[in-house]
Length: 303
Image (cartoon, rainbow, N blue to C red; front, top):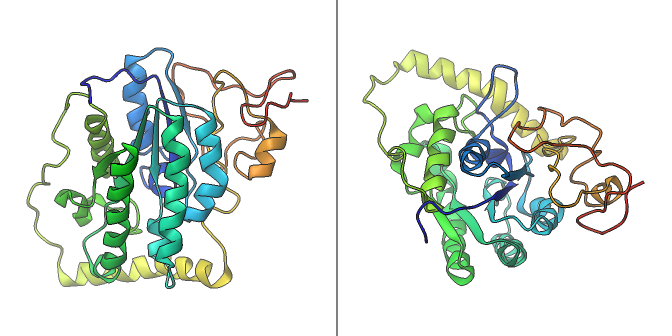
């Protein structure tokens, strides 16, 4: 792998981890490691192109059905795929199906890009982590195998001790803080062959653990604000990603038509703002589809 690799485009595929939760900005939008990485890559390439297709709550089957074809069609230099962890956290998880779907995703994405990036996802130290660790490690072993077969880069976040530190996790105990996302961005940056800018694996300063009473108050707040709603969604078949659409894809060489996007249930309408945030501002300009544009996915001319 060359140092300071000159990549000119990036597409990110996945769930809430890649969407950017919980790197919350003052305006209420999320940023996250993928946006941070894209900003740094764009600084080296004025014509840099970026699309983040990730949506919170998505299972690997949904990622394959809704994001993979769209990502492959964009023919980006770099594609990142992080998915499957939501599946392992479900009470019932078919690991054989999970592996098969990951195989399908990688087999479709790897030939479409110069460099595919996979990850061993991080986990917050605690009882939930211990409960699901065997499934997670089975998933990660398969990711390692896929990477070896398809020439993908694997960023080992799971094996990075500091990312298990509870201080790098939001109060929902499912998503990284801004500092956690910054470290992940640096890890991927280095994995892509760029010179290190800091030590993303360095431990946090030693801190005095919170007292028993403070921990119990935090546990009660977590149960009320985050655990109970999560259980409610599982019981009713709902997802945190319902009615959430990805960032509109910027204008690459072609556009993506509304008709096709509706078919793959991915982008919604180009003329509809994304539910949570406006498109990220990079050197390129995001623009709506115009009459006469041709869809990058189906080649149909837009109305």
